[in-house]
Image 1 (cartoon, helix red, strand yellow):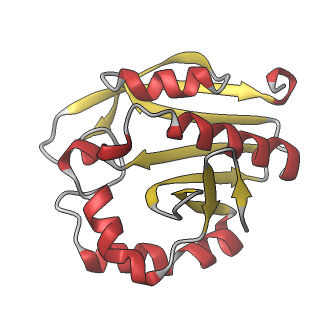
Image 2 (image 1 turned 180 degrees about the horizontal axis):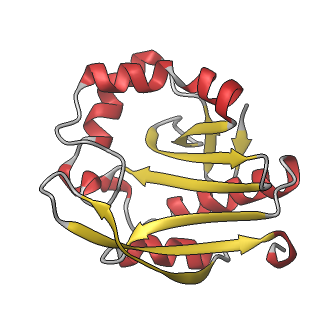
Length: 177
C-alpha cells in the first residue's frame, strides 16, 4: 500500500534497507526519543523487524510504513498504525532519522496516517504517546490536530531501570477535519 503526500511517500520497507534502517533508527539520538527501539540496534534486528511487517498487518492490524522523500525515494523514517478493531481505535508510533528532524516531515506523515485511519479504516479514535521530555514529538502530534489527554506517570521503564512519564495525545473522528 502506498500513501502519498506533498513531499513524502509512505510504503513498505525492503529487506535490502536493513542496514540503512539500523543506521537511522539505531542512532542514539533517535533511540533516546522513542520507547520501542533497543540500543544498540543491530542489522539482524532490523531484518527481523522488516520481515515481520506483512504478518503484523494481516494478523494484528498493525500497518508499518517507510517514510520516504517523494522526489528521491530516500528512506528517512517510519510510521505505524496499530488498530484495535474491538474498540475501533488506532495507536500511532513513528521515528525520523536525526538528519531529517525539524523539517516538518513527521507532521506530514502523521497527517497522512490519520487520514488513512479515519477515511480508509473508519476508526473512531487515534492516539499516540511520547516521552514527556520529547517536546518536539508532542508538537508534531498537536500540529496534526491531536489533543493532550494526560500524563501516564512512571509508565515507561528504560533499560537502565529508570521510569519515565509518558504524555498521551489523541484525535477523535468527530474532531478530524
